[in-house]
Image 1 (cartoon, rainbow, N blue to C red):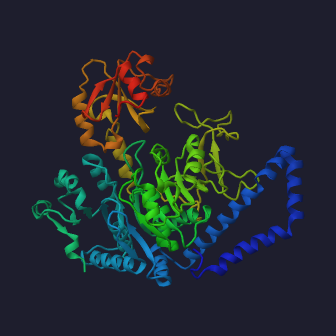
Image 2: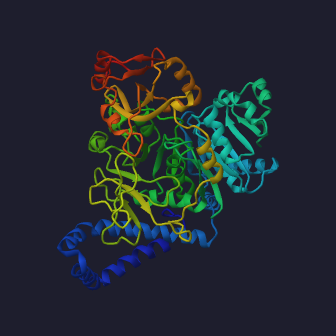
Image 3: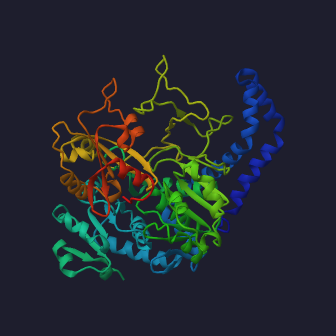
Length: 588
């Protein structure tokens, strides 16, 4: 909980108690360190302990504080809606959510009123605790009111990626087991494309839509109708290793993720968070909006990220915390210098995926004092956080306190990503600075370590077995996907390496099929047609060579194509065009 929220005393007791224990037991701490040194660690362990003890103790304080409040919430049988009710009682007139596109401001009492209206409407539909309702709309405050209101009566929202279309959209609807769908008018066309598959569901639209379109869907206009270990909602995984899976988010997981962000990165009740990330993902809806719902901060919601408007928005709404993900920071660095980037009040940028080679440039150019980088997954029971503002680090694993937060980084094969084992069949820990796979010990009785899994686990497994999920398998080709970089393409540009034995691959048909099946960001920018697939000795697809060669026509005799954005078609990639792309003269 934040300062001024009625829980100051317990938080102070934790901090003071921990410092008191540490202050009165230096002799025993030194004796323990000496014992470890004599037993195994040697001088190196003492050196590492001296270098990391401050960082580890800060991390321990944060961990204990989060554990205390989680224990308090669970003991009091608190849910996210009940915690939000406390925030409303403390400051009903404070700004809770701001919609950037319209400038509309919702106070905490207004958000509470609207979510209550949603709850009453849900009950009137005959939905009961445990029922699932899909929410399919672009990011805005109304989406928060919808999932919060549904949660108040135990209905479980499934937050659908608004970029999905056709098969992927229906997959996510199917695995959720939704009885109904609330969709935004901006996504009416996407819903109309699959209306036959939605015929058994109750459909509701919010926003202005043609009456005839709603009639064809048998949908009602929602705007006309409105006057702790339980499941809160479902957030879908990114689907990088198959179709998206509906990860279960229980109430305790929600406040665990939001609270770690709050305490790890030094946020306070007077901060204003700028959220330009989609609310169907945990980064936007938990790490971002969670600061409003649980800790009473104001959150500014932008429907979609805009590099050119980012700092103008921050100045306009007096934002002090911004969120980023993936390549957002590099997109901002590629923008021309503008006055707003130096007169904002932002002091913290929190997110994940900030590449080390742009980290310092980002902090220096935009005068950001603290980077709150973290690493984890929505459904995972382990995560990392950069609590000491160390440049380039996504977190740490304590050497001197390994059992306090039992996670490990394990060696894995670079090509297959399979764990490497020793002669006894045991996994091999990584050395400092060595990349690997993070794992965490599962404890179903500890809210910090439990794994809640996915909805319809068996259904997901069956679908992954029966449905072809690879981009090119949808058109009968075998492919592997790689990532390529160029100065003309911000971020990662996907490449599909396709086996074309008969030399009859049709680029136009392929493009039409992926446009129907995939959102724009998932469509491959580059194609590589090869007479055979490159496999390892154990018959796994060999991606390393493809990744290294990228889309350079001088590195391969395979046929290469790129998706020309202006012409909306795949064009043959020559050396001249390759040079133009690399020099930024040709936009894809």
